[in-house]
Image (cartoon, rainbow, N blue to C red; front, side):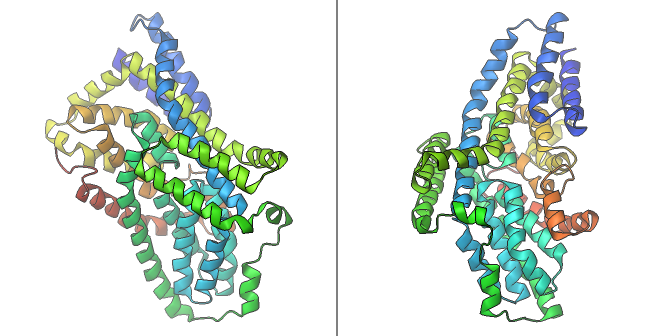
Length: 438
């Protein structure tokens, strides 16, 4: 009966998320509590539900804090104009050569994606390159494909959506995860550069090379919005670059907890760029909604996991899975999780898959000898396809800005995403992140 309750909890949770009857935060906080109370009344368990939920909160709290201040910090750097030189440099580098334009699209998408926010990345990249693609008569579909897939690679960073959920669910160390993801991100980016080169060669052959005048390039690289100009800090570019570099180095090094790094970096960024208290308040109020929503979901996930563990529902599911899956598959459980993560994260939201399905897969995998860290990497391989899902809100921003058909975009993106999936899989196996066999 405990097993039935566990599966029912996951199914109800996923249905409510997918049908948008409840927000992820509300579903994570309320559904497990409701099932916990019902199970208590039925005599399936006798625990302190509040204590169980709080035990889960203690595990997710540090990750939620890290995410909140990571989003605040990188958004603050965008506000100050740290990424403007990169954007302008890519435009000047590309000029009128379709091949260079596509390479620059990948470089800019990857660079801006450091902030972990998809909407921001889509807006910045499209604002920079839509005019160029139009003037050169290049295919907007190619811009949409390169932007989303390049962003999907950098979105694997620990302060990005999927990895943050994996860290939370499996209680992993952020620095350890980041070190493992570095080769995946490097080779994934190299793959995307190769994709841009292949697509660019085709467009160069079709269109030839156009030479923009200095005046045209100047127009493309000049900010005309007075609100943006008011918050830019071009004179503080170097110190912002040093601060951001120091943050990334410390994150990889792992000698300081990532939450502390981002809290201190955000405080320094505010003091350096906006000395006036009124300006600091304005930037926090402008950027807090994005970071706050992410943190709320992760905090609520603690309640979900705490009750699942406290009631024994997580072990019941793992036991049932182990009994129905052939024993011969156990040695390849990492591959099973990797392949399940592709359709899992496409047809389900990240919240539904990582909070509802991954704990079950991980519990079974541990029984087969895999570590939570290995299973975490395996579950991220399917992210090659996730951002093609209609459940991802910011893809509609991209489709609107590029004015391309969703069906065509998904079809073309999926062809290149297959290669990205293979790259992730091969790198994970070669670097020992996800053993091929236990």
